[in-house]
Image (tube, rainbow, N blue to C red; front, side):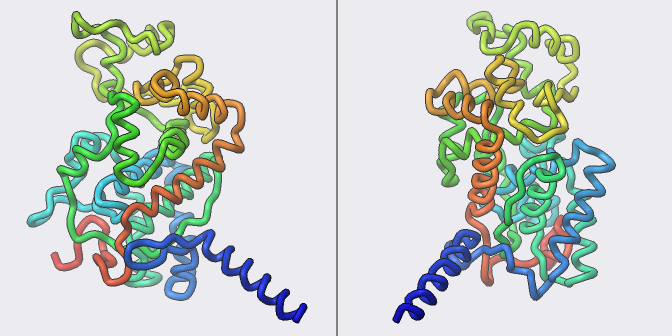
Length: 332
């Protein structure tokens, strides 16, 4: 009886461990070992291409992480963002949050070519996006997590969804949190995932409204360090220069760490959506302070939230398809 009880405990622990890395969807499970038999080198191939791209251009790490955000907030994590205009499909790349902004598609194209050579019509573009985001984070010095896999690719895009669902940098805290809540993410996810701004760039047009009193009824933005604002104005003029790039993290722009939160505490958060984490909600303010003091806690929460975001309404089972080319559906 004692031996049987021991076996039962071991079995329960193993089952629990499996569930920790499995995520139930509306039609199946996502789990890290999904391609272990059908394409055993899948993750190795993704990592090698991403590593090469980030080595050649460190900024690419942030771009690939951002692609997962902008994909998952529209129709779920289904690679709809990767579709180009074709037939009845109007690309999400043309939306206001994405136009002249999202990038890194050529890296995903190269990954897909390599995977099609190794395992034809097996690894989805949606899973490629999720793996590339994880690998980019790690290459920039951030946390590692097991990526649940098994997503399939959408047959359609949603320009309207892209324009409406992706949080804009000039929204209030309640508005941003509302966008997160709408896809099943909470306040902790919002503050932790905002930490992706520890790497990458933003265009002048994303924060220009913070630098100039362009409306006579609008008060100066006192949540922005005025010495920092003066520096920003040198390359972000009242008119023009909209596409000039600025580091989101002025302290360690290519290193994935918690300096982003320390910048916010010093009122050196570049975007309005960064500073409202400190100034418009007490719970988020406390998280900003905790992450600024504890890099390990930030890494833990960020990894958990990336897994959670990657589980937003994926297509599984017989839904969607496995695209041969990420930019178009197979029947074209």
